Length: 230
Image (cartoon, rainbow, N blue to C red; front, top):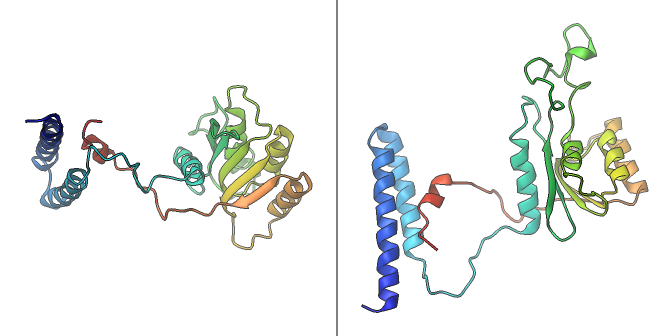
């Protein structure tokens, strides 16, 4: 048996063992519907990896573009937000593609998520019973979470267009470009966002809407367990 055949046999054996172990782990204690779903998924993953040629010199297709990658990190960061109404994430990136800081909307450090209000409106009309006087926006947190790296000349990816207060901090920190995914509202006429557009324009900060190359980015933890050894 030559080295190529040994490599293929070794990869197949490792892959088969992993599939068997995962099949036993997931199938045995679970309901029939879950067994069928996982069985179908494992079969699909099995076909995918069995079709790979370990001797192919070609890079894989379908990998993330830089823009999709950094915006996806902003969206993933947003999943850490405790805000029940709006989850926003931001990712500060250097001009050569190094992540400098990430952030999401939430209360300041040391301020309990359970003791301050998350409400958008107050039944008594008291603004102190709403989240607005207390919350830190994602853009601010991303800029402040850089471990003292400068934001000057860098790019900020954010899931939602920044408000006027965030625009001020973006300008003062020296950020050169803002890439956003969506406005807060379609055809938003809110003064805060009209002012934000005006400020960023006057400061000559490049602003563009992210145009995703992929419809969705799905993270499957189990699929990575099934990958053959590299």
